[in-house]
Length: 138
Ligand code: FES
Ligand code: FES
Image (tube, rainbow, N blue to C red; front, side, top):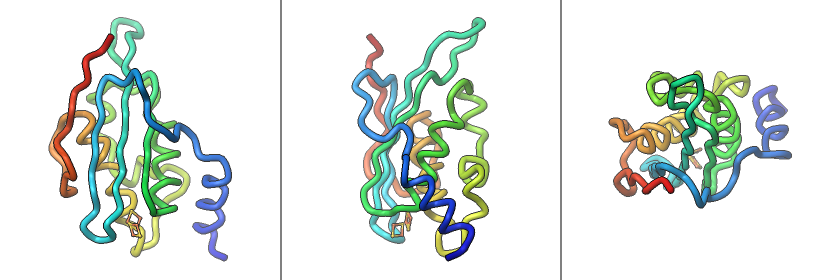
């Protein structure tokens, strides 16, 4: 078993931030044409030191284990980042300690990046399964 597979298995033994967020400020969804997987990410912002930063991020993924592991890592890394900082993160950076992803799994990271871009309302390289929605914050 490769080092990468070990890390993915570890991440999957205790995935963080999985599930729909009922009080999210925004949500983004992408589907991967490569494998038919779908990933949705929710973001909740808060005010900190006069800046609007990500308080929480959560995700749902259907199918791919690597995408679940990367999304678990990414949703932890996003906490405390402003939307501008989050928008600059590459798929590689979002993959964190799980990376570098093997060539066959690069698009799993791109799926997570695409869902984040979509949730942030920016452009996404991934085909969008549905347009970004901005939820009303209450
Ligand atoms: Fe899911 Fe490849 S099997 S992205
Ligand atoms: Fe497509 Fe992982 S998201 S194989």
